[in-house]
Length: 119
Length: 107
Image 1: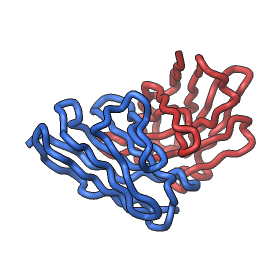
Image 2: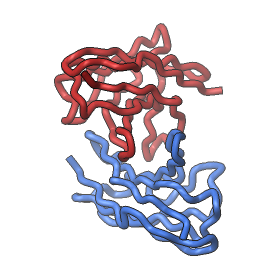
Image 3: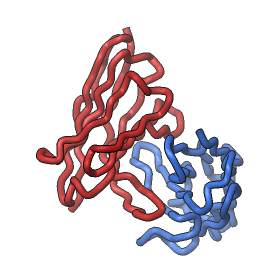
């Protein structure tokens, strides 16, 4: 059974940093691209960042570029999102997900972890 | 970045109604489009991929169509469990972009 378990969310002050992690199990982690998707309270879904299975290719939304870094440790079956220079508008539930694509229509999401940026 | 424009942003419908949601891409994306359903408090669920392919386990009342820039999600006969918010997502290139969502409410 595929499981994605996020951790690391919490309350942080503007300008602060936080690292999210996503522990994966039930599949060959290194074979799949992974993504972070977020949802601000009462708002829609926003793609944040994706990384290839090997970790060699990573992509980020313009809204987080230069502040957030996606990475993965395939030896630990864990995905990360390092977030710095956090802003109030980064407040959201952050979901870890296997990346769904037209070629690989897989659909697995974590339960989400809440990041709240406030003074 | 490719902009995905969904319409309407919300709609009210009754059980048994036929519902259509549209998504327009700011440039051609071939069939690289997915539709998700999200129930409040839950993670999104994939309904349709490759614009018109039904994900396994999804009821056949859901269907998708379109190619290029214009896409449609249709629910042929709305059921009580279908009241939710629906999103389109393009996976043609990065950055990935979602539509702003369509909330389907009970009339």
